[in-house]
Length: 80
Image (cartoon, rainbow, N blue to C red):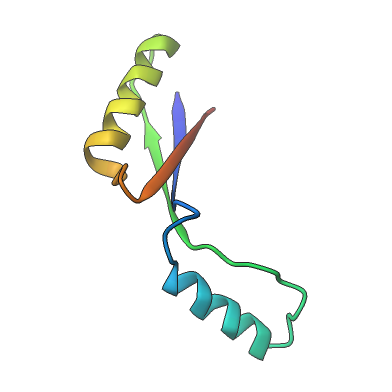
């Protein structure tokens, strides 16, 4: 089983990297982009036979303890 975890800054937190990317896109002629937010994506592979409910509990703990800073970042995951 695999999971992808997406971590992004909360909307209330300024995103200087996103602003820089948006400025660069504008300079390259992509002027239709209204807003750009940068983030991180993690791909995790798990051992066979893991129950989905345990996987989701573990993903939540991983995000809260290591992968994201819950004070300034939001996270979500997709299980494949």
